[in-house]
Image 1 (cartoon, helix red, strand yellow):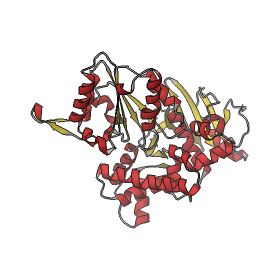
Image 2 (spheres, one colour):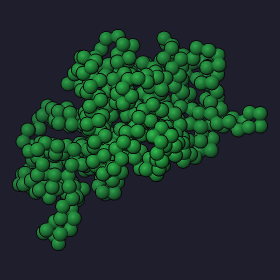
Image 3 (cartoon, one colour):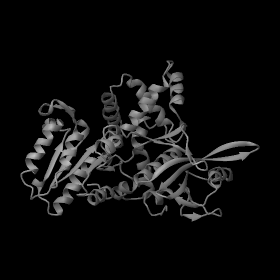
Image 4 (cartoon, one colour):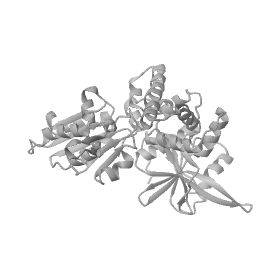
Length: 424
């Protein structure tokens, strides 16, 4: 069993807090194992009896009837209300499979799973946990549908720290494997490289793409696939829906509407497959509307999308750092600073502006800095911030960490990923 202590501890911390615990994340990233195995075993170790844990996996045929929220609520009520002296735990897996139904006992009013969960939340002897794989169904609706009484725990694919804790061995070898195959947990059970590649490709096509198409009733699956290919080949590059539409129009010799691209982009983000990093004007303290950067939630899926033909370690490293920062709970933007040169204003980029409450750091991702020109290019934007927040350069080409003459902290990538370096 792969340890997911960070997420397990968050569940434990939020037990009986009066809110619904909503566990979100891309499908197959380990949400169900976290809840139905790791947290379940923890409860048993604390003396909770099996009959006190109600487990409903809505993607299993035996539980299809509970996709009807009224039937689900009645079933839970029949167990919990008759034994108010006992504490119960409700686990619902893949809650996005529930349907809207009419409540015939109340003038045919439409009822959703949110209505039923809010009703169940009122039980003093019931602690509710649900998982979901679609942010349109969950993340965006938590504040309104759950009436502000929900705790969201977002689960990502394995971090390198979790990956390495399982595989062990030489760190650089493990990192090479992680950069190629990513952190979907099932990968660790596969030894043959062909099996790993086949698994990721099938997962992408048969699960994620089909799920996005079916859930959103998309008519142009070919356009969706073209967008995903484009984003996979352009991770770490600035773009916007208009640029993508223009590129697809040129490649496909047909007019592709930028509004269609924008809509499909949103669907990929709703499915947690793609993450968007917005650009932030460091001195102006405002966000730019466009362009943005897009990163893949899992690098293995990104590489599989391109059939492993485009392996760019610099961009992959940048994507990996972005994912790691999100997993640690930070707010992450792409920074923009302006330099005046020869009476011209030149925009320069800081890879990541990382905020934790009122604390901030700047991070530059540099695969290697082997020439003076490369070094100057990477450091120039950090010099232009005009403030005293900590500035970090994460690199692959240094054996140890150090501060340079500018006061910038140079950090080895593996040390950063394994958490041996303190950011703040």
